[in-house]
Length: 299
Image: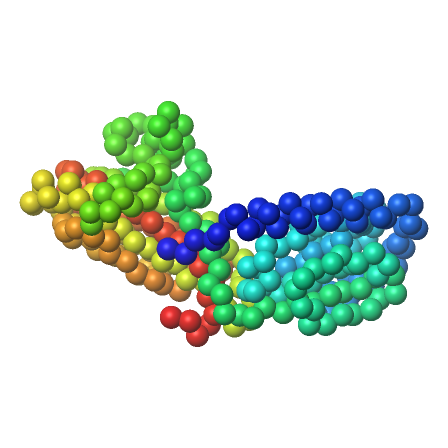
């Protein structure tokens, strides 16, 4: 699985916050930008905006100024460095007090008191967007029997995660560390039930930029002891479903180690991971799923 180093990002965030405080102080009592100027900025953005762009506005803008941008979905938060490598960034800035960024500007569009700065991605980085392990919420898992939802796993567990009211205590969703292939593996507890299915929901993602695609990587495996002490243990299947269509699956037999797959995922629709087994005895099953944005030609 892909991981993002955090130490350097935290340090960078501290520097950015300090710099933004300085910029806000520098605004002083400067004249408020007119509605016409902000409207021209909105029109310029609409001409150049592409799917997947991230729009950032200067923190120096007043709320009344931002209202004139209309429904332009901009944020004052500077994206993390890896986002500049995978996303096209458009910065709406004040010409007199521009924000300094270390990234190379592809294009600057002068609009009098305002300017647009465009930062193009290099398109090569694999960008993690979501992981099931880190994204557990009360809406992540449900239990279905005979194609009917019998429980939503929303009850808080003292040990972490959420249990499923009305279901056996071993049906729950939580972060776990299990011994898989003789190594400690972090994963999501996904014990199946032989009389139904457990279903995990992965939230919908926005469309990626041109030349990029969404890929879901799914892997599952049993705790080593569950394999070694259950010679007749049943296989567990996890189907990957989106918009009612089967996008792929993994079938994990009663053996040591993970089974993995990668499938392309469409934007703007949630994904479901439906896990089933014919016999749930000692099926101490562990699941991971990570949604990535890749270059179109990446494997």
